[in-house]
Image (cartoon, rainbow, N blue to C red; front, side, top):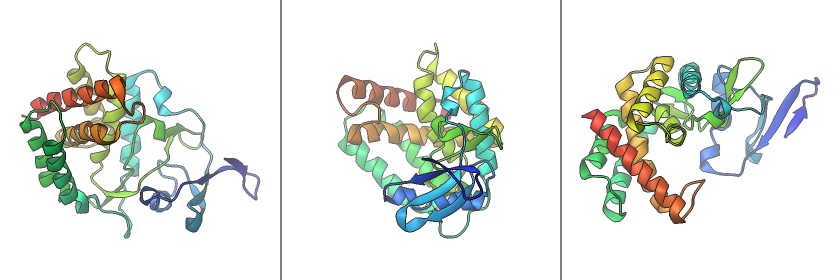
Length: 257
């Protein structure tokens, strides 16, 4: 809700529904102090309410060129990667849960991914997930969570506030990119190019970004079967999206080998 501060400056009030995923949003904003994200002016944690810097209503998702989109996302990712304050959820502590979840889903859900695809995702959890940098990351970095602004060209909103590997957010970005790149003649090549551009802009290791993106693709394929997606909860639309997730996860696994 747009508001005015006591000094007359423009701002917004954001009130979230009480949910574990929303608890550390103000902590992330406070740690960034306006670096790559909107400024937190005041917080009322008991009400899940924040007074925030007002950005524009247009998002990075409205940029026509995919290369510009992923370049901006990478630069924002780099600016957000600051030392994480104590008290934030450490993604490394979720590695055991992720591995168990992947194995359970692979055994219980019908899917078209070969066993080696899931094995590769489990390997990423074991090799990258259990030892991660103690850096603050957005946790849900996608084009709709990056807004045009006046103080800086682009500012992030709606962070989860995790401590972990900045390359992890290359995977959250992938979920938006896959739908945008469906019209590409070679989907795998288009996705790989986008991830490489993101990695370069974020100053991250390409292979690390690719491995996290693959992990997210596998989890997304299973998630859709258990819960549906925001744009398709059931029916042919959901079937098409889960088939796409299976296909993309398999294609990315082939690139890992």
